[in-house]
Length: 260
Length: 291
Image (cartoon, rainbow over all chains, first blue to last red; front, side):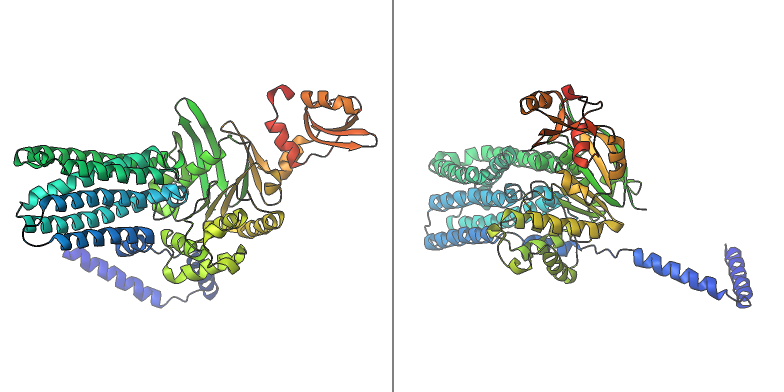
């Protein structure tokens, strides 16, 4: 091995020594440089945005309406909680408010995501370097991540104020949230026309009413029923994950972009 | 030379074949994709853009499958869809910035490029106005501008002149002609005059297949001896129209002058006429009973 390296070094040295005595052909050198220059000029400099840039673009172009609606909802819930905060706070009032907010968070998220389809931009966006399927997944993660963070905060607040186990409260809040996600994604998938906005608005009202009806039956929140809530949450989460996967592949194939 | 190759490309929806075994090699230049509504033009363009998966065959860019190339292929694309959507609350400038971001154009370049393109399509004055206030023609022009972002090597324009007035059409033709040197431009339309002035080659598409491909001169040469002009009495017009493909009909002092596209002389006194692209279109897209 060492001998090979020494030999290669010697060969290289001899080659350079021989080259020192050579006189380059100036004309051919110039021609070669011109060719190289042309080849370099033909090359297109490509900019590949880092992931942080990708996230920044997503956040920058999320519509103002979404941020405003999300802000109002979060503020409304915090004001409501602040009003009821303190000793002896009513668990049912908290739960009602939290459940309704959870359903609306899902509707808002899908309203924002469905906008690509409602506005007819999906086809164009899918042809871009950062395409719709990538944007959709990133926005879905961003949006649902923020929502879950918010639900965790209010879940913690309820648990602390009402001395209820935090795990139970989170389950009660996540069930309407995930179910709302499932229904909204189904609605967006069924029709991608502009009229779907009204379907989502109707869904927001319906989901809120269902959440209110559930929280009006205290027996459903007995410790004995907790396993049912957990089962519903797990099932809904699995269905939601399957829906996202199916939607993603439909987008890649172009099925839900080119057909309506 | 930069090339895009379509090998036996097809698209099926259930049992219906929308695109049926399209084979062609596209190199730099302007291609006019002509065909009637429902011929499969938009589906073919969507497949070329990689938006729609093919049911069979493959599309190769410089020898590599476009699906495999993924984002690197999309980077070469400029696309104007037939149904060009937009976010109504965006201004023209913001819309181009947004698409520049999606096309991975550095922020520093995006602003100047957007200004330059808005000027090119004549929307400089309204760059800060919301798109929802734009007319149909202005929206279309914005669509053309966004397709040109990033200096694409493959420019695909689906019905680009729909909704443009004659002056805007001329401006569009000039823009495309100026761009045609070092890129592939595919222009889909059913308006013959759109491609007549700017296309180097024409692809005629019918029922999902490419019926004929060639340069305009080549197409016109093939049509020699298939276009006839004759004068008929007004009461005979209807029967001629029913029997032959009539490309024009004009009332004159000598009677009705008919221009007929037919493989054989339709009437004894008919004289051969110089074909134009409208005749070519009519010849290939005539009804089956008018052969």
